[in-house]
Image (cartoon, rainbow, N blue to C red; front, top):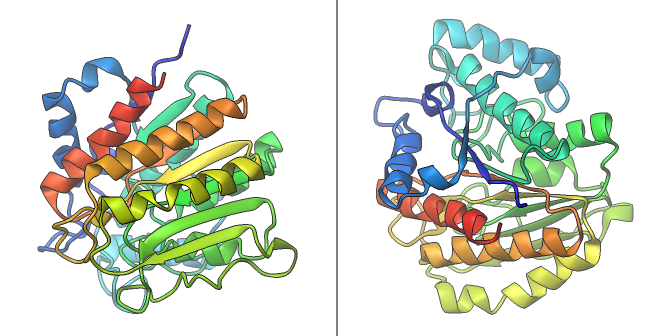
Length: 316
């Protein structure tokens, strides 16, 4: 009997955002969940409550000095947590800690076979570096999950797939020299968008060379162009034989996002998620953790992330 897929929903992660008209506002979780309920997906998944990470858990990826900075500026709500993209707002430490903790809770559930697939809409904060925030991302939940899988479960071979319009630089550079972190990232060409990285020649360093696949896409890339890449992506991930797969499903690659120039449809999110599930099942473990990531068009968030959950349900 198959295990019902899970979705993490709760105001603790929903309030992660920066207010004041900032693109990453606290409405994003409900933009998704209202559409998911409209499609009847909520009755077909197990709903999980958010869980807060401890500072010790966050320190599996981030430096103690940076964690303390976030804690202090979370009290005052003053200044920035990076060079000027990610403002400090009151309570940001707690909401960011809930994002990380929810990703860890999902990981533990997957590893204990309570769930085989979990989607967390407010997670996938892929720009945060160990020592700083970046691009609206305070703590890098994927980085914490990767290091936790290794420390607690001895899972070494991990695949990270990212279909957000922006390059997942915080994950990429943290593991650029790690041959056991398989990295696949399709994104709008860094010459045209933040953070300006993820060029095709960035394939890993040293022993990790060839374990990273960065695919920069020209502005205006549509579904037909994207789907021509899928055989290459599928082969790359399958041949790596990862023991756990993380997929960051940013909705800002869908046409109509206010801060990007991609022209994909939610069909890409459904198809890529389905393919990842098939790979995980083919490898015999079925372990898939999916996160929402970016996306700043409320409609796109709703239909894009609902497509991810629909794939979870259809491929039980």
